Image (cartoon, rainbow, N blue to C red; front, side, top):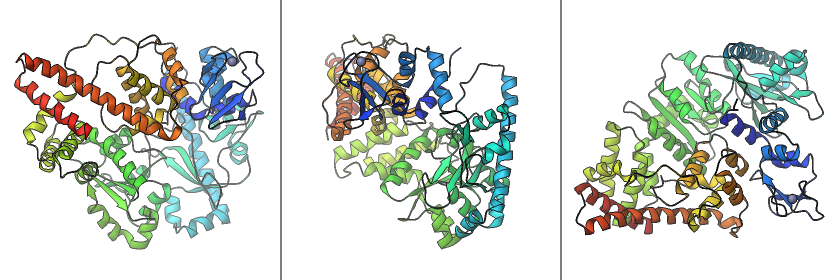
Length: 581
Ligand SMILES: [Zn+2]
């Protein structure tokens, strides 16, 4: 029986390796983000055992012991793999999915839905008894009707309100734990996850309560606390407010995606009853697929600052593959210091809706963002625009919209549309069929740029997010492996650490290489790492392009180029120029 990959990813994202090890071997902080101790795996007097918090990876400079949280449990507590996963899961209150009969699983799910509904009802009753909580809602300008529509509640202070109310027996406690409502204590027993917070029940689109968000009443951290992922609640799939919007409208003419619970509620109260919020995650393709079932127009709402623009661009990239001709997507950027909650109170529904209808279209935002990265007054700059845009436009389904985007690109880059159309597909195909991929191992001789890119990426996985283009094909040893790593990091819903990344290759031929690179010295100062990484990626792109050009040039020397290959050649040459520029 195998444990699902997603579960292990999620588990590792919830465990902190420093806490885990520190509970057994006292660690002391030494340099940067590394903690040190005497190595538990060999006898020594000086501390050569290091634990990196950001990497979630440990390494002994003397005996070479190394690994992630699962490895530590295996090596230190002498567990096998399933036992190590089980032990870690218990520490964070997760249940390892079993391969039990699906019918019994469904039964227990309905029990969990029943429990979240009862908890929401209890929180709602608590709200009505708490002057402080009622005062808070009034002061935020939330009407009684809206509070009722969204079933706003209150989790009272104290550590065991929910536990005392719904967790009288052990099976009941287990259900509370599975709903993410209580947390196990180290010394045994449990306590309430949500205390002294205004509670926002999160409904799925069918209206079942799957989780909660809780906001502190005044100061205090964290300001918002969400339910963890549970069998009922997957953050990357759910949208706050969708249920309430669907109750108001059978079909939604438009949906606006905002950031927070309070934004949804404030908009709703002021008549914009079609707002939804993602739950502490970026918009995912799952979110969009769900929304496109109910609406053909989506307005993404972001802050007007740089962070907002970056988030908007990410949302645009997620949207491209899901676009089709009937859809309309807009990007609304708010004035400085405003969020939908404050703005709608100031200017009301009509003005806010006017902002939406005049917000940037997807195409306008797309070309605006890319043009800013290119000097449009030069041929090289326009070639760069064409190359950048094409890598994204090929994500679009081949429909009218794609054709129109190409025409617009043609106008801006002053390139013939036919040329662009021809470049759209052949560009990223390999020129020759390749033998089946050979796994890279610790003994594979790797070209230096590949080795450096791999080492930096493994040690700082989030660097993958800084690569904005699709990397062209290349036959260098280890290159496909690099692409696979980038792909895993970019498609993960949680931030990926070194420890979590390596876990994907447990027991495979690549594992020793990954572990070796995880602690390879590269002598690049922390502040220069991103630039160094992007530099080496550019170098790899250049090598790919050179390989294509050389291949075509040698063919052309023998006068064997087809008309298509001639066009390819000129595109590769302009790509190369754009890169140098
Ligand atoms: Zn050691």
